[in-house]
Length: 279
Length: 286
Image (cartoon, rainbow over all chains, first blue to last red; front, side, top):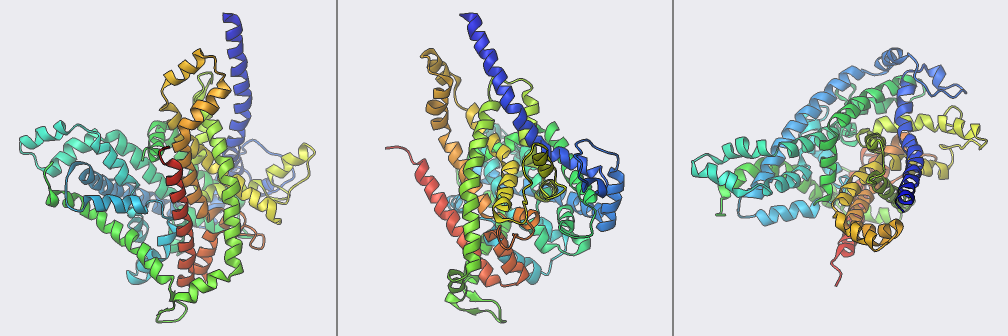
């Protein structure tokens, strides 16, 4: 009885791996090919043979990319924008989440209702007025402000942090209040440290969103010196005289750092994404 | 709790300002712009100008048709795949779980531009690795970019690759919140694993699956980058043109803000309708 049961388990386990392994390989294939292409000269990429292993041409490809567009400069803009955006957004949304979680005030119901009521509206709806406002009314096209400030409207963090703060026991904060500690100090020195895992998850998701953002930067910062890295790379796709090995080197530079961060901080990543479902 | 208006608004105001200026006001503004003729300066109020054009515009119907076609095929396939991934990743029999998780979840961090470039290269007609592999097993090459059906299929494959793991993460979290004893009872009653899946797991996962479906539908409805970069501006000949591309073309190539706003509000209308259906599906059974 026990043998047949463990044999059945073994059979099922083998079947599971026989199905999942090819699927996993297919899923990894585009990422693997990105790396392979980034190390091959263009006449290798566009040759009839099947090449599945990396070569040694990454540096050449990178130089070609840098010749086609100032990619290093664009990466610099992307990093600065993503870092600034993440810090500002975490601060703004956790302050708002704290207010919604821990205080009673007039208009609270309305604020929550408006945030929830508009959260499923497509971003496309605000694109045109945002563009008119930032480019024409404020004349801020091709600036860092244009890349950083408008996307701060994102309300995901507010709901996420509201949830995090409202799960904390009230006694923690009341004890400090009895001692006369000011509210902003309670927020900064009691609440925020307690919310560290949630802040990490939020920060990772926001950083990634900013790093990969394409449509808004494409519209608002279209001048060569003001482009983010994805936009700069996007301008090359579809050109006739362009180094595809170079494009792939750029894709690797955009992707591999994020993959490393993903592996190192997988727990926070997954928590951040899965949190979308608790709402 | 006593009322603490001043303290609360000190924490809330910075965010609310941004939220009002860059989200709430644009939502209203976009609605108003859709009723204005924006090709002439100054803009003038002309309620039927854009909406009338929209109703009679073959380009709009083409984009709407393509968008809905992608929605109807790609979203169910991807959600089904995500459920399979999540359930199998959750299996206690799985070895080297971390590797499999990495394989399926890694696309979540890959940017649209980077993966669009790779897919374009992988699927190119003569030198694309996909056609080479098809050839090597005796299958004919597919011209992914010059014919509408393969081009649409390519867009759907790309989007599925990018987002299946994302949905699997959410579904996996849902799976792990199902208490173990539900299954123990079923196993004692000798209910087969397959029946357990259909009669216990799926019904309990319904809210999470509906959530994923709505999220995916709203995302796919705005599809822009993939047809913009992979199939080159909605090619071949508008065959992969989407509402997102139409909005881009009208708003930012022709600078026709009024018409683009009407397209945007069509997308919003669809999103609202889908959200209402979701609420209806999620209602407590009487």
